[in-house]
Image (cartoon, rainbow, N blue to C red; front, side, top):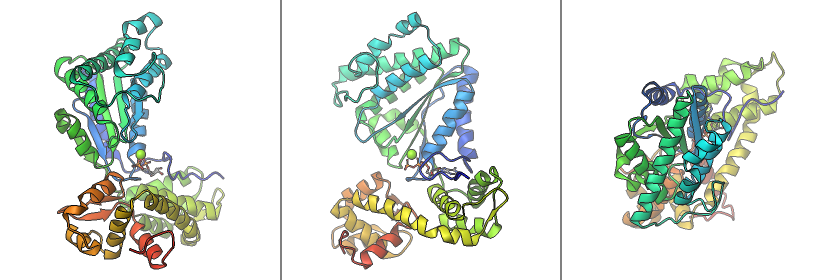
Length: 396
Ligand SMILES: Nc1ncnc2c1ncn2[C@@H]1O[C@H](COP(=O)(O)OP(=O)(O)OP(=O)(O)O)[C@@H](O)[C@H]1O
Ligand SMILES: [Mg+2]
């Protein structure tokens, strides 16, 4: 029987995100009821693997069902995303048959594409738009995007749809000028054209807040929503339901074991459940027990080790030193002073590696200048590998 768990992919059951889904619904119903913009962007924040993309995809599915034209872009480090946005709007319009050929021309899509920096006409292109445009050029791009969003949203509406929803994932990553153009276009739409049935919902690492507010002051009015770990009941549902659909059960103690080990962390839940299933190969009518969970643990460890090794490999030597000191502190969170002392450096010199590690989603602020690991198990992994003096890792 196929394994119903999805480490690294969209979950079959999105558990425990009712509040966040409700919030998105609120924005969408404002757009569809009044035909106006959904207000400032809603931005979901959280560390890697907490379920940001999963929530956004579910929101997209829901919006599609409720008559929205939806467009998804995922940002990449320092790269422009507006060319991608334009070509996806174009693609979505064609797919949905929202605009006829002549109508499409009245949207000036080709001209808009050129203004926004898509090289030739509207097509997916990797070519970068200039990142540092002068003020006038940026102004032209803002109004081109404004026209695109407004035109698209109103066309959808005229055809009996609800409006346009743009979803932006990995919001911490994109080129600052592109972000500024999007935010300014949105501000103009929100301020001037009440008849723009358009909403923007985003997700990214916690550093998205700083990235957004640096790009445009309007961004301060965004609604920032932090995705918490899953509550134990939701975690049990995320594990139990996909199996139940295939006629396979989990014993109470087995569910408890998985839920406790995952500490509410969705990615870890999926890895644990997937490994349990794989080692037990159940058939309909079976029940997965604690012994099955334990039998799967070597698989879990192998998978997590690979992930941790990748994270370690992506860190600079200075960042690795900082991580090692944090891991050996052995507490849930570590102060700046403890890190500085452990590294034999001044607290001021920690600013850069600290920020970079937060940007990469490996560690996160825990209040009062404290830092903690975002992913359960990483500290243990570092302690184990640095203690064995693994040659590939410095024993700092
Ligand atoms: N609410 C949920 N219920 C069950 N499983 C979930 C839930 N949210 C996420 N998952 C699972 O957790 C894993 C990580 O989810 P996702 O990719 O959405 O996280 P993310 O926050 O976007 O991570 P990244 O920052 O790395 O992009 C996936 O395997 C997904 O199936
Ligand atoms: Mg994601």
